[in-house]
Image 1: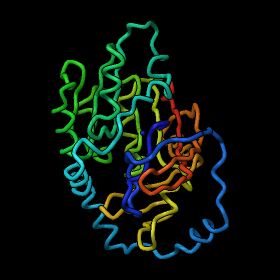
Image 2: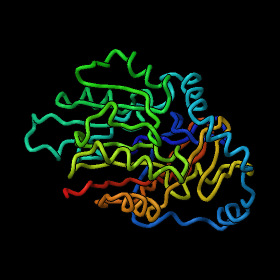
Image 3: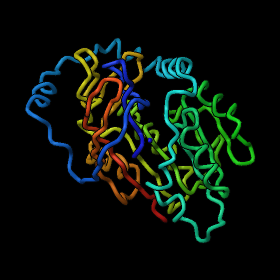
Length: 293
């Protein structure tokens, strides 16, 4: 989940969490993937060995624990607040018939609230359901001084298996955000996530997506021994990251019954102030609609 999203954890060459140590330079939206240099192509082609099946099963089993430990280490201080969301995703306002109409939003994978609290401050006519895999992250959301049960409902949820309708009424949500969330889910289970969130989205409602794109700098700097599968890697802290091609994402959503509205790469250069590097970042920013019938 960004125009001001930095996307790299400094100080750890194998970690790719969106952190705070970068400044944005120019950016461009494009329908085509970033072109690799010859050296980058050789590096990716040389990554043939995958993490063992045993370790992969262990990572899947311990996924929630690893994210909970991440938030225990970093509390609420790691990610930047995402004040760019309404600017980038005009549907947050454009889907209203009139300005004062109440908008119901689900942030699937809310973390500690870096997206929802700027939205709640900017828009008084919004109600937010917010869920996260990590119980610790949800507790940080509930402890935030801006958290108000009249305007926000935060709950823990494993989107791959927990029924969202236990907390969110069926077909009640106008807009769902999936911002730097789906990349943390194993590709085999991504369709389960989309089927789950589709049940609470109104017909004609939107899903707003932003996540790591194919050939992002974070993907290219993983060392050998971190590859789990095609475009899928594990960080040193045990959390995983998938890097999306627009073709893979479009097929995933369309197979789940959604209509693609937009689907483009965002190419940026960012300066890592701590390491003194200018690096190419690639994100995928997309919008999908649940058909009316």
